[in-house]
Image (cartoon, rainbow, N blue to C red):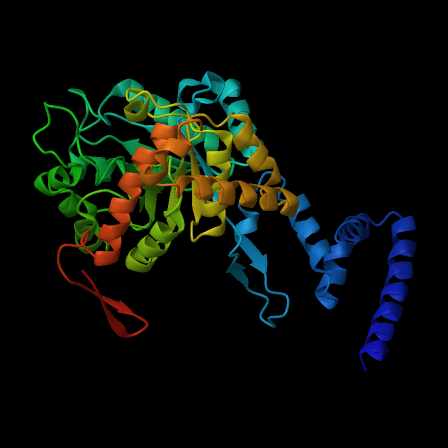
Length: 425
């Protein structure tokens, strides 16, 4: 039956083609336009009758959306008779968090230079750009922010604004959450495509400064009535608080803010140790049931640099990328040094099976070394970064014990999972 139908369809196409070609040769302008349309879209017409050619469909989709790097987020369910789009489990968004490279710090660039930098990031494989904004009332800050959003509006780059907590802000930092939300609602209405939303950095981290009223940032959020302001947030304005696996008050993040967050940006305070990283991903994903974007540190942060630590090794970075890519992470955010060769190598090869197998080996080697405890300290003395291994191993082990015993959740927390009650301490 299929062969007969296909044969009849082919005969119909041939007859129609000769008829149109005859009229085309007579100079009929309508037929000229119509014939050109049919010829230019022949691949799509054929795919509508023979939908098993998945590779061809992907190629056409890529050609018709040259700069659309989000097309991986949707795949066509060919075997579904409704042919609807569904999210791909393999899609991982890649974000750039305030790059070190001045030529890629978008908010500081103007005109064509800014547009070129946006396309450079997109071509490298980035989908999101994160930059800090200190005060929505500052005229210059407003101007640079809107210029960036306007430039990105015609592309597929999503902009996420970073708000600073008391531990990082200064005397000019604005903590009027209600006004911030009003400003973000305005930006979303004006720049619907480019403006994604905002994050608050170090949301559940502590302040090491002496001039902050609260030791923990999250306690300040409660004091300053952030929740009340979030109630006025438009649903299209996304809120991704930046939290740490090892941070305090994770129970409060879940209970108080769970209804107002659209996902989590997660970092590890002990990023020199990856032995328990998979376990942490699993726990956070199970508790929050929200998308998780994980921060990758290709360069050293201030707190570690002042302790005399060396920068993260390439093997450590590759191990982290391997775990995060194969875990429940929905996105990766590269912190500052986005041009580092090990990061650029990942961006180019993140779909290459041979490369993924190689960084998997790097992960196994990294974890093997990390699991050497202080009992074997003498054997470690000749290895590079001995102190980093030992100190982070101690911290990670202590955190693991807290996770196992449920001590990071101070009270029992009820959740509904598939209709069943689940309790977390």
